[in-house]
Image (tube, rainbow, N blue to C red; front, top):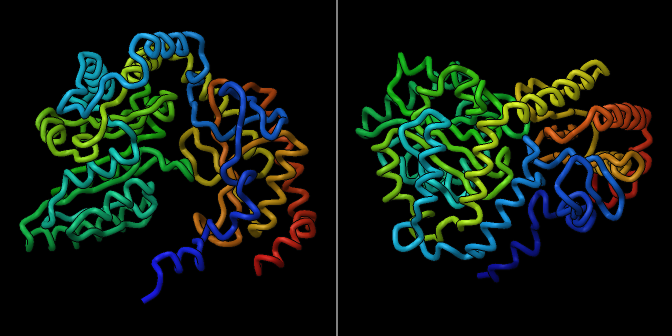
Length: 419
């Protein structure tokens, strides 16, 4: 027998092995200053394209006023305890009711955090005889939720209705044997590529198969649809989404999340969500803050309009300059380039140090080897000047990538890592 920690010391994982080269700069970077389109990174001003503050609410004076007043009145602890025991208030109920109405569902229930809440919802919805069918590109919180399932699960190819249909056939055959049901899981917007989930096509398959649909709409809530109610509203199928999930961490610029569905389903979840039953209630500062944010989301459509003005300018500008932004149909703007991990590190350093552009970098194993994904998140706070500077910077780095400059600069790192 060996020491439990031997494996951890010997194999730090596909991302952890880069820690000595990447930590503090490429991963775990420290952005400073007020949350906005321009912040400071290592003492330098940078245009920030990695903050999910879609509607620009995070630093608005009226938002900070409500947050501050709630903190002053209640502190950071109230209410103490789990919702079922001592952590329930009229404000929690008010927020739930307003959220349910906004996303056109009978009822809603607050979740402390999106990640653990979403995992717990999946765990509560299915029993060992049930079958889960989910998009292979679903977020990590969904993958981890599915891992809790004691029964069978199938993945379908990303946004592929034919693959989904084949897997529904398999799931239906198995469910008939076990006596269970089927849960299909997709996302409103896939946060890495920016593609909307094929919700309409999934809903159409309800005519042929019996299943329930759960949608994680973290990036769609507040950004898509006529009112901002999300990808289901955008695609005209909100009523057919059986269980709708969204987080406050994107458009609402806060902490927390919610699940919405028919009243009977929410009543069941209230009494069976382990991550909420045995965890502290969402503090009042976040609840009152979310009420204010939701009110602004509902009553200030100009915020979403400004967001999409910036999204269109950035995405159209990139396409006009010949950049590959994939098939995004949302605010998420991926830029795909060809290159190694060491080249990606040299490229991003050039972007940040010489062009003042800060965006997220994604490499293998999240995407295939040989690809570099630069992920930009436009917000309502960005300006046309920000976009123009960014387009010029991207043209410059592409030229250096193609002429081998980054390959030469990264030769030492590549050799050290065996690339």
